[in-house]
Length: 202
Ligand code: MN3
Image (cartoon, rainbow, N blue to C red):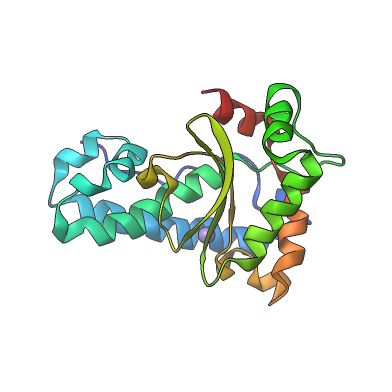
């Protein structure tokens, strides 16, 4: 039985500037994410056979999770999985950061152009009420943009996430205060499109 662990960041805390600064990343990864992982493990202790599954599979199968831990698994399991996923689709800032090849083609087919896709994603992220996540997901081999509140997971809807942006205030407030749109706009320079393409193809 192996407990879930918070994966280390694939870059340094300060490497995502100007998107988010070092202070945000230290608190976000070392405090928020670690707390989700700790509480996820705690929730599963009563049903240790669940440690044999992948965390994503537990969320996909959320309806089969015992009732007494379902909410905790949804919240903390979701928090653990979504943050692990989020760190991987980011990388240090690049100019003219765009998807390539097959993924670009798929985005253009679904949203007309990369720019239209960005506009739609921004509008979902800007209008999400309260805390949650904005996603680019695959549903029946089609790309869609969707929001989930709190730590509700696209996995639990049988959607396959390929890109996400954390819209909880802890993700941006220290730098952007109430100006969420600037946070969303600065996101584009740090998207790891290679990883997003890998998620798209798998
Ligand atoms: Mn977060």
